[in-house]
Image (cartoon, rainbow, N blue to C red; front, side):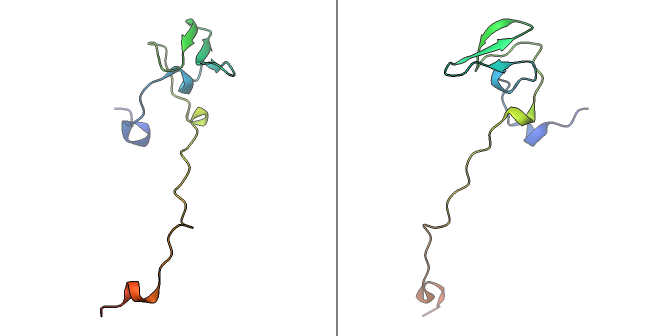
Length: 74
């Protein structure tokens, strides 16, 4: 049994496929297997490529400011 990447929470999409090439300024992907595809679609030839995924930015910690009264039990 194969182990799923990132808990299997990644939905197959052409923009994450090993074979697909994104077209700049467009919502399409060029696929050598199927031709021009929408970036949110996928086919049975889909193979996940982790390097094509862009991670979400982490939350900024600059917003959080605490004072000593926040940690007192009084």
